[in-house]
Image (tube, rainbow, N blue to C red):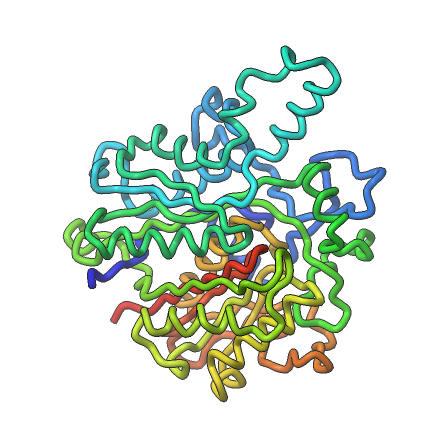
Length: 416
């Protein structure tokens, strides 16, 4: 198979508007969760989220173009601009026909839907804003990336809930391996912090609502006092490239994107299979695809949502996939700091895996005060402080488990 490597990174997150700022805060164990400012939460039980702060898309893209985009789309295009710059690729030197786009997105322009429906019900169909449809649909993320950066290969949007961008990375991997493309702009984006989004997840009883006065403590994966996930937003983009193509142009190479595995639980519309079977299958398939053994994997970035049902199920998954090695591997949930970026989560966490390899640092799970031992959460979750590896970090994995039972796992390896 053609070898695929990562040559560029870009992100916008609750912890910063660049990879550098976000990663510094991840290593420091800083929380990006705060009071919601994007809408009035007076009548809401949940008043906190992982908002992207001080964001101005016009720092990277034309202001007129940005005004035609929903928030999720602005995040995606800015993260792409950063990643392409990092990879040394421009509209002038990129091979447009040999480059594709593969984006994961869970919901699309939720704030556009909310605002336009309000106009519709208050004033009638004639008052719906003209750009409602092109701004709200999820495919406008890759569509705008294509137009802004002159990329003429396929531009796909994939929706598998919280596994969307992990699965998008997997599809991108296959596109390059197959020889269809040499480069792929791959990742995910989400911007769903509005009244309709928070309200919708609140009535599902999936969000934490008891930490409004101490937002930074609200996301606490694997802890016995966890209550639910924290809605967040942002985008992460990885430039994936065929190895020989990257070497030929003298590209900086972060690591190898070695494998992907996916599966479906066939269990429940919102809850993961408590046995962990589906997620374990995805992990085993990813390891097979990457040609690694369980004992080769040193770090696993967990889906780790901080919900009562996910964390024990994911721990069971890890134990099934890794066997005895589950107690030797470092496991952490960076959602403890970023919150849950839904469709963007997998790509952002994959980016953290790439940075972990580069810096030799295991990110922490903050707010882990009392591990939920009663429900089997007894692994090394890198509690509260990042850990510098004694030796090189050579192989890492990241998993995402989405509503509907979608499971995706990606594996990255140091290039020797």
